[in-house]
Length: 40
Image (cartoon, rainbow, N blue to C red; front, top):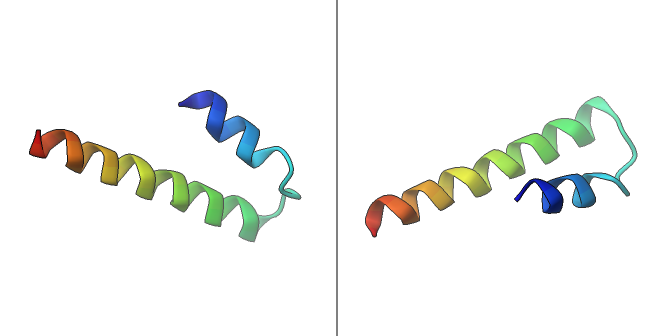
């Protein structure tokens, strides 16, 4: 999981907006993943 996050964030130019969007996208992925796990 950590590998995909680090590799996906590498090519993106660092900035307050890009980091925020990436951070929220990761949170959304984790949140949806936990919801799926709870359903199981």
